[in-house]
Image (cartoon, rainbow over all chains, first blue to last red; front, side, top):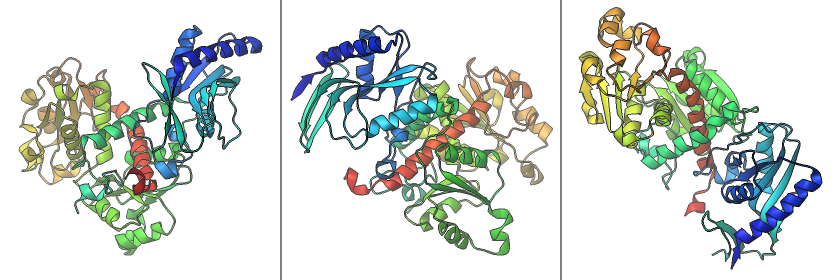
Length: 166
Length: 326
């Protein structure tokens, strides 16, 4: 099954704009989590016309399963080209599942400084949380049975694929 | 089993880092790319990652070293490991304890990684052969054999300035014969596909088999430094002079020392490297060592990132069960 990711990003952009307005946040800093989260963040960044440069986090060194899977050989440098202190940050990922990636991303973010607040925006929330983490902005909610996986393929075109794990 | 094979698991993943020799471009690129991701950690407020939290790294130094030991220590600490520094030359071995006994004793302290420096070639390999399977061994310099993390940090520094390896001409100058740094760097550059590696040294400081390393040999800097992109000066050890392998320091500087005049023979954007600590006025003129083309201090900074990369890759591979990739 394929979902139109561009349409879902439009949905996210609308929700995020409303939320930022309600909270009185004029200039948030967007941070995408590698790889899929960065693709979504790039589009939201452009769509919302945000002046603060986009941040990118690779949480490979912060994963809690290092002792089972080691370091990701495709690790990329994290870049936060703005001062994190007292900044309203929007953390963006493609899929929210167990919550462990978000926990790692928060840990990494706080090693750069102390943000004023952090919002979480995800393209798809598939449930199955193992940690108390919830998203503020959600493109789509999917109830997937075990044995199915969801993957964002991109960057051009951006497609959300749901597949049965072989 | 050779040292090159001993350091890989059945699926070709790096378990120990004993020598650059025999590794593939994929292995070296993985180390360089991981180091690139780790380089920025030093500029952050919290200069620490949780990756090796709960792991214990032992710096096992049978030979004096400040810089290498310090950078390994800092690398391990920046990955949140606990670090134990043991200078064995002044303790166990002088009491007649064998290398294997030392190894067993430290193993009994529940360690995960040994960083070994030893005056004898092959010492780190010996360790890797005898440690328990969950322990990773990193060679921090063994005799005249290898210093693989130094070779990789040099390659990393070169790549940051000159990423196009096939067009690269690198000159390594000085005591090639005794230099584990030179050997590891030559292997790394060849594996990464550098255009040409030259060695420039007096005949007494060149091993007979040097050409088998795939290098071009020069005996004079006037010929060898022409149009090179990178100049790597090696440290001269004073004891070599006592063994009559070399003329005096002054004479060496006159014939091989890197001066501004000699640097002018290289390409205008050539970089100057040295594994340190430098002997000013022996291998290199202070004006060059402190000049705009010197990347010597950058090498020190990069050394921490490269050592962090090797530590996290090897310990990560130890943790990963083989079946997962089968």
